[in-house]
Image (cartoon, rainbow, N blue to C red; front, side):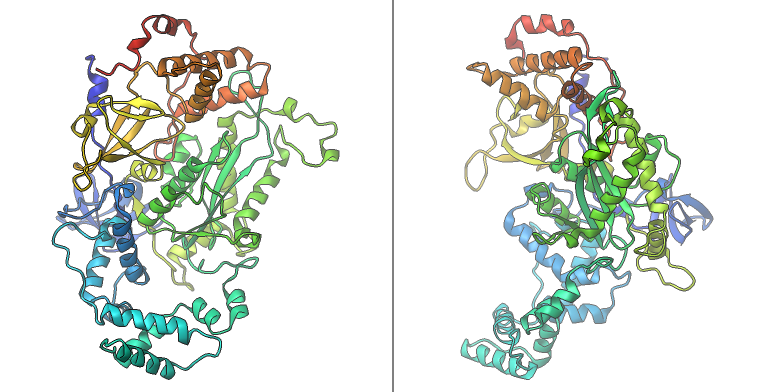
Length: 640
C-alpha cells in the first residue's frame, strides 16, 4: 500500500442522495441490470415486477431494489446541505411546500383539487403541478428553493395586495366572537379594497379563502375555545391527526433502571439511556438509540435516522432472526420542549424531509401519553433482569444491584431489540390488536378495510439520511485547514483556502458536519461540486476520540496551567486517561463506565452502518506512543 493511500481515500466524494424509492404499483425500479415495473405488492419483503424489455414477471425482494437515476437539472438546489441555504430562500421553499402539502398524499392529483388549491393560495395551477412534480421526484424541500436561473414565479389569480387585505379582514373581522356572516365579511373586504385602491377579488375567491381557514383557528376565533380544546387536545387513547401510519411519531428519552457491566471485568458501570420513537396511530416502535451518555442532540439524530431507515441489516448485525418492517419519513415528529429537540439543525433537517416538528405544551403531560406509556411498559420488562434498580427502599432491601449486574452493553442491546419485536407483536389494549397488525392494516388493508396509506417510500442512501441529522458547523478554511476543537486537513479543502464571499468580500464560511462520538474526521460539503468529503484530523497520530473525552483532556491541561494547549498535549492526556482508566476500572464503577463508553463509541455502529467494527477490549500499552510524545512535539499538527 502506498504512503499516500489515506490521502487518496480522503478525496473520494460522497454525493448526497435523498431519493426515496416508491414502492407502489406502476413504479419503475431497478434490480440487477434490469428495469422493472411493479405490478403487485405481496408484503413488506416482496413485490412482483414486470421486466420492461422482455415482459417477464419475477418476484423481487424489496431490499434489493434500486431507484432509477434522475436527470440533473441546472439551478436546482437538490442534494445541497440544508445548512447552506439562506433564511430567505428557505422561507420561500417552506411557503411553496405549504401550498402543495395537502395534495401530496394523493397518488393521482386531480385537476379539481389543484384548482381549489390555486384559488385558496393564489398560485397558478401549472405552478402547483410543477412544484408537486419537483417535490415528488426529489423527495426533499430543497427542490422547492427558488432556482438560480430560469425560475419564473407562478402568477397569482389575485394581486398580493388583495390577498393581504383578505387575510387581514378574516383575522380582524371574521374570526371574532360576535361571529359576523360570510356576506358581511365579503362586503368588508370589498370596502377595504376600494379604500386602498386595490382591485377587489371575486366573491367565489373570497369564499374559498374563508373556507380555507383551519378548523382549529375557526373554532377559537369564533368563540368556541372549549370546543377547539376538546377536539384538538390529546386524551388517553387519541391524538389529533394520527389517523394513518407515520402521520405522527413521538420521541423521548428515559434512563433504564438496570445496571450493566463492562466488557472486560464484567463489573457494574451504571445505567444506560434509551431514546424511543413510536408511531402514534399503530403504536409501532419505529426506532431507538441506546447510549451511556445523557441525552443530547446526537441521541435524537440517531433515533430519527433509525426510525426512517429499514431495519433488515440492523437485525442481522445484532444476530436476531425476526421482522421489523418499519421505514419511512413521518409527517410530524412530536416531542417535549427539551433543547435537544429544539435545535436549529434538527428543525432544518426535518423540514427538508417534509417533517413537521411539534412540541407538547408545557405542563401538559397527556400530550406525550403514548411515548410515556411505552417507556413505562419497558420499565416493567426490566424487573426480571439481573442488576435491576429499585426506587422504593423496601424493594431495595436485601438486593445488591451492583453485585447482581450481569449484562454488557452489547448483550443488553440485543435483549432490547428482541423486546421491541415482542412489543410490536403483542396485543395492545388501546388499539385492540398488536401494533404489527395495525401497521399492516394501515398499509395493506384487508377484505373489509381499505388501506389508509401504501407502503412508505423506501430511503435509498442510509448514510445521507444519517449525515443530514448530524450537528452542522460553519467555519472558514485557512492554509492549515479548518479548526473545530482540533485541526483538520485534506486536499479537498485546498481550492477553498482563504476564499472570499463575492457579495461581502469577507472570508467565506463553509458547512461541516461531525459525529460528536468520533471527532477523528468530519464531513465537508463542497458548495461547487455539491458533494461531501471526509476530512481527517490533521495530526494523523491523534487518537479517535469523542468530543466529551477531548473536552475532559483539554480541561485537565487548562487546569494544570499550561499557557499553550496544543493537540499533542491533549493527545497525551487522552491516552494517559485511558491508561489510568484501564488500570483502575476493575475497582471503580466510574472508570469502568468511561472505558466502556470509549469501547462503544469506537465500534462505530450506527443506523446507517449497523455492523460494528472489531475493537480491542484492552487499551494498547502507551509505550508504543511514548517515543512520539517524548520526541519532537512540533511534528504533531504539521500538515505540510
